[in-house]
Image (cartoon, rainbow, N blue to C red):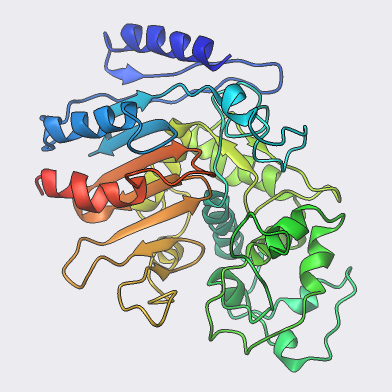
Length: 394
C-alpha cells in the first residue's frame, strides 16, 4: 500500500521540478486533499554542503537511522532536501500484537501513517501545536493569561481541591510540565505508565484530574502527557470550540493546511497530547511559522511574544543533575548543546517525530520515523546540530 503512494509521490516530484513550486496531492476515503507549496532550491544555492545532505539520505537509505519515513530540509524558505522512504510496516507489525485499535502503536492502519494516507503520526509534536492554539486563545483574550489558575475552569468535573497545591496550579505550570501532579511516564512498554493508562481509560480529563499532587507546582519538571490533555480541554472551555475546529479556523486555514487527522477520546474530546497527524510538508509550516515569530505571509497568526516565550528555556534543564540536558518552554523543547552552540528549538514525538528550527540559520528540518522497538546506530535528533549546521554557511 505504501509503495503505491511512494510511486505516486515520485512521479509527482518529476512533474513539479519543472516549475518553481512544489505541491503534493493524495486522496483517501477518510481524508481530503493533502497539499503543500514551497519554493524549490538546491543545497549549494542556499549555502549548504550538498555532499552532507546526500550523506544523510544515504545513511537513512542504508538503515543507519532505523525506520525513517521522511527527511525534509528547508532553508531560507526553500526546500533543499525532500526524501520519502517506504517501509513495509505491515510485515514489521506482524511480529507484534496488531489488535485494531487507534492506540495500538503496532497496528499499521493507525501507525505511523493514518490508513494508507500521507498523514503521519506526530505523537508528542501534537503538544507543541496544542500550545500554539492555546496561545492564540490567550492572544484573543479568551483566557486571562499564563498566571491564571486552572482548576476553577474545570467546574463540570469532580475535582478534589482539598490539597492547596492543586488549587494553585496555573496555566504556565501545565505548559512547562511543572504541574506538581503525580505522574509516571517512563518507558511506554511498562503497564503502569500513566500515559498508557490514560489512553486506556474512558474519561481522560477526569483521569488526570483525579491524580494527587506530589510536589509544589511551578518547581519540578515532570513530563506529563496528561497536562497536555488538560490544555486542550481548556482551549475548548475558553473558546467554546473543540480544539480541532479552533485549529481549522485559527491555525490550519491561515497556513493552508487542509488535510489532517486527529484522534478522538471516548468522551469525544480531541487527543491533544499525541493524536495529531499531518503530512511532512504541513508540519514544516508549523516550524516555519515559529521561525518567523508567528507570522505567515505577512499575517500575524500567533503573537510574537507567545512564540518567543514558548521557545525559550523556561525550564533550563529538564534533568537538573545534568548541565547539558535539554530545556523546555511552552510544550517546545530547547536543545542544550553547550553555551556557544546555535540555539535550536523543536517539537518532539515518540518514534522520532521531529520538527526542528534553527533561527540563526533560517532553517527548518522535519524527520518522521517509527523507531519504537529498536535503537538504531544514529539518532535524527542529533543530525541538525551535529551534521547539518556545521556544513551550512551563515
